[in-house]
Image (cartoon, rainbow, N blue to C red):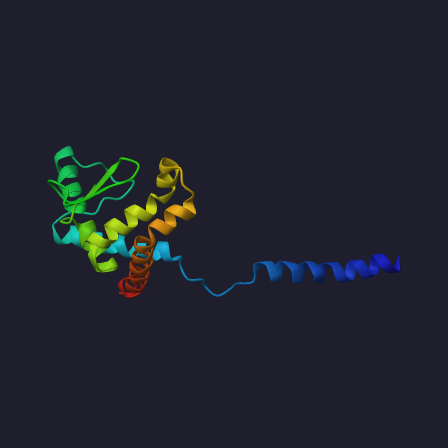
Length: 168
């Protein structure tokens, strides 16, 4: 009987302590670097589109007429023939424009859009290259040390640049 009384007295305190420990607030953690860069890119592209007289596209909004969608896409991604091009060892060719709002955001965040394009496309395709060339990922990474180093430097620059942009 004594054990039941003791349990009845201790159990509520133990539960309260457990619940408090599990629900205690922690200081707000910092956003992930990828999230910072994505948010800064969106802020920059939205501002660019607005400067060009367009309303930035958002999910859930009514679709624009086809001609207006094309004008917004051209303003965002660039128009005409793509100025940047990279043939991958897999045989695919990746192209990008240098005249759209996204290109302007990349220049602002990464510093050099052409180098960012080359580094990010190369780094993003290391696994397919390894599979296509029958090499290990480590071998392919070693062959692309320069692009990996550029990618790391430019990504770190973009993360640093994102903070002040998002603080505005």
